[in-house]
Length: 131
Image (cartoon, rainbow, N blue to C red; front, side):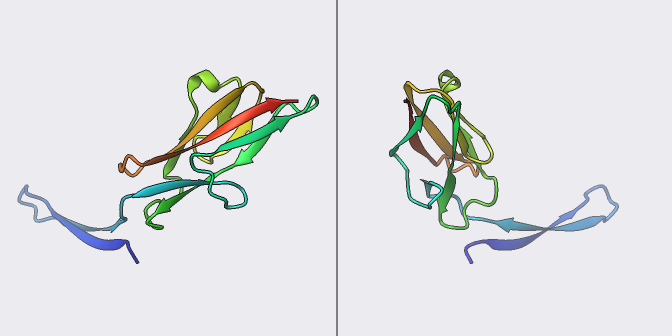
């Protein structure tokens, strides 16, 4: 296992001799981040085309982030985003990575960024085409 568990002891300096213990789990930082589609295919840096026909008002796609090393990211430690200027075309849930294509005519970059302080991120482009 790449994670480590340590026990931290804190002792009061006010003369009371009070002390306590805390167990902390330490996980390695992300070195690489990838974006996977619903079929677990790597879409990092690629363009995914979404077609909306006349009766569809929107279509959703689900993406997940895969971190290296595999234990680097624990649940919900990625923030998903799109540029504010893209809000009319594509939206993304910042916690789940579910993308909603709302309107054709623009290619939008979706970014997944690790919250572990590593600064690692990955992108996928969503091209929405209105039929």
